[in-house]
Length: 319
Image (spheres, rainbow, N blue to C red):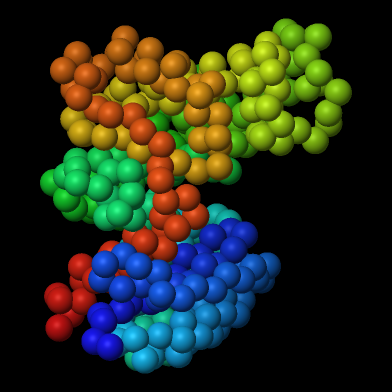
């Protein structure tokens, strides 16, 4: 067959997913491995390229592999293929992994961060397909963001555009790992949901959640669905603070659609009304009415699809 195919590698703090994807967005083959707990960047590099080779061999009869897109959880210099800072995979800090992957596979390699890749993936074949101006927010351990304007991902001069999680929503609020205080990440991430449950516990002494010393965000959500007052207040705050951030983005960027994904989006039905209320209260009327707020559709495949799309878009430039 004469399919055009790219390889796509999505490195997360927990797992590495690698796939072979064709130009129609079909995943032809995939692998999944645990991300090594290592301080050696070469070990991670070897794992990525080994899994990529598996994918390439698996599809060699289906068409030609043209390149590879690679995604990492951190700040990147996409043009140079360098990871600037990856807090959850610190071995890659200041490492030119894009160039190294390309050399080992003898393929052009295109590097992107995870939130941007998710935005690109959802725009290509997910919840924001068909929209030229979109924002993708990922609610996980932290809060990530990717912004697409006129069909192009917004990177900024230093490659750090789209850091939605570090918009300040509470000036004297909780300290953030970025060095600031009161970032939306400290109120709307999965980690924040757990922290808030413990911090607010004294106000809700009858909550059954207080009996558990190792709460998960899922347990808090399940309690909220059962009417637990503490859990409901946690999700009210999650939506309240995220709504403040999104209202500001709507006023600034005038998006057509905002896509919300990530594990902590599981509480969607409990926090969405508070997001919508803050947007209605704080954003300009017409942009607020226009902006659709929807859940992500691609799940764990968002990064894979985004990396593949990135590779296809850039291969023509390389040629």
